[in-house]
Length: 70
Image 1: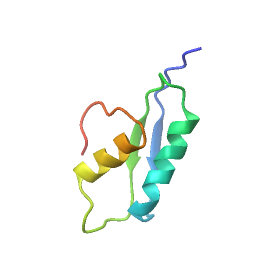
Image 2: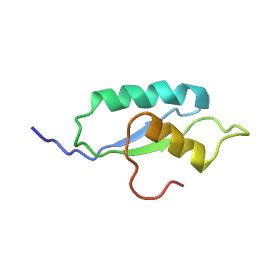
Image 3: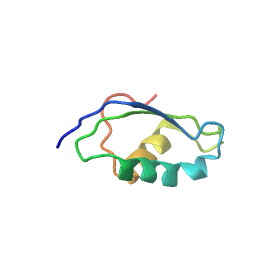
């Protein structure tokens, strides 16, 4: 059964960016293959944080990004 849900998730609010890979992996495991989600990564700012790093984390967790990374 295909749910194709499109919920919004805010992950890592005021937490270290180093916690995001496992948080994203847990989210990925909780979804069906065809589900679409909107994710806000709210990790604590770090000197090496960038849109590219966010994109790398998301793809590394198994997601296929669509749209803008801001």
